Amino acid sequence: MESIYYYVPLFTILGLISQGNCIKCYICSFSPYDKNNRTDKCTEANFQHENVYSTNCKLGCESVIQYDANEEMEQWKRNCLQEGHKLTNDCETEKTPALRLVRCTCDRDLCNISSTITSHFASILSVAITIIWGWNYKV
Image (tube, rainbow, N blue to C red; front, side, top):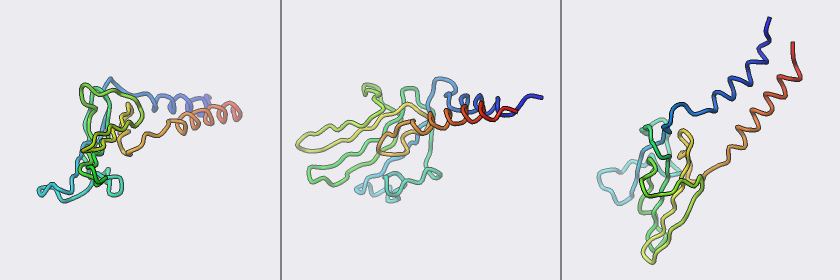
């Protein structure tokens, strides 16, 4: 009888592989100046992933935060990566005298959950531990 320990690493690795060539991203926006949208479900402090729409995106995901010249947040947006913007799996800041724009881009499903891009080190580490554990405890 085959041991389940042989299958655990296989299913773990398969679970990390994206299906298809689309990436699922959160879609929301909030501006304190938008009189039609006073419910903030999008900013870092109030993000509610269970109440936010998500869709498939071809280029990746992004989180964009725009601040005015006084460093007051004007808009927070989670979206599909827009044409003309580079996928960096990092955050970049654009600054002009009138505004500061922080754009974080990523290429994993629902990766725009945060305004900072985190490493996938934890996923890789869990796969390695599962494989080692499976090899050490063969039945």
